[in-house]
Length: 259
Image: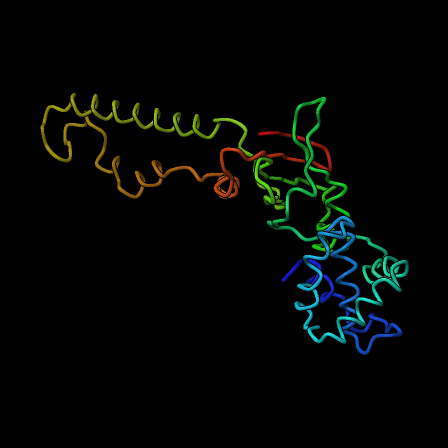
């Protein structure tokens, strides 16, 4: 199902007005879906719209030729009114009850190359007014991670708004290495203590070696347990990226990091 069809189906039934020339609410949804497909997802490209218009109607179960003709005529008739109607159905386009999660969109409508900076960017304003608005996202608050491959035609744009910890260095590896170093030092100390034992008893009875409880399995497991990975969500997100992907991290609408 196309995104425009999904949006048309989300409109509350009690708020959908009856338009003259249409027979039921579903046909009104058909007009709304076609208008959204044309203006938002096809950027008013009529030729592109012709390829998807029939699919929108089929998604909404408007398959009869007479019904499709009625919807098509009303699309042209109410063109100026539909923008106002859709804004009303979305409560004037305000984002309320914002969502968080991972979302996927078509990349090409929202990415662009800055010749002066020689970098790829995401048009957050266009994305906010397009797909993000209908998914109840607010891209201007908090952290937004965007992943896309500009070399792929009709590629995908991954958008994460969960606020994951961004891995920017090898700090976690250094901490792990430090922990391993401490373990090695403790192991060497244990060997030195054992070498001073004169009774050769197990456990030691002369007092030179560490006490019997020193190597308790439970304590050892607790001390040597690997540290929790604070970047797990980030690593999971990166597992969906490839070598040619551009990864941008925005903070409150401003570019914060680039990978």
